[in-house]
Image 1 (cartoon, rainbow, N blue to C red):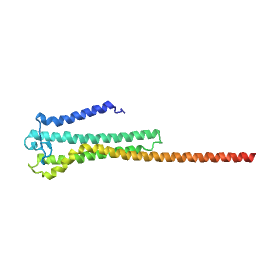
Image 2: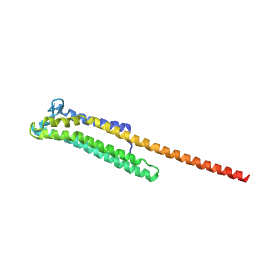
Image 3: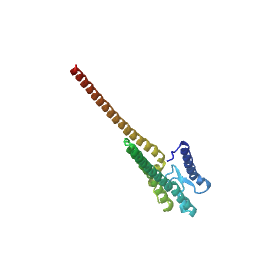
Image 4: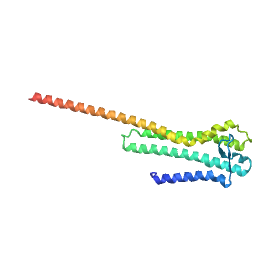
Length: 214
């Protein structure tokens, strides 16, 4: 396959930032608007526009699809493809080299990262999306203020989840890898000591035979 080079990563980041900037600045162009949260400490999209006009409903539904459902589908699809690719690659390599013993550790790491990132994204944004849809298409002031605080905090803290997940998984993987290296080192030292014992025994046997011949 084609390796992801450094400039490919920068292109992907530029596309992601352009996509996010577009949807963040759409309300400034007159399509939708921002409004204070019900508890008054931060701002959000004006979800109540859906009750005012058809254009407001179209804007809210577009935001839900392109900023929640579409990114979720991309995340799930990407990590599923990565896991399948890693599994197929390790099987191909193992077919030619049977000495590889740590490929399953990499597969487990990628699987855990994929599951945790998908779960973190959904936990952060699904409650906020539910409350937002409730506010947009329910009765005015039907969402209690105390019910809107926790989903908002989860959504606002979503940016810190991925670095924590990667750090925790990398630490566990490093510990497993260091433990595996220590085990291999012990096996190597035992093998060397056994070879030394065997060679010493052979030398002593040869010396005894020489003495008997003399």
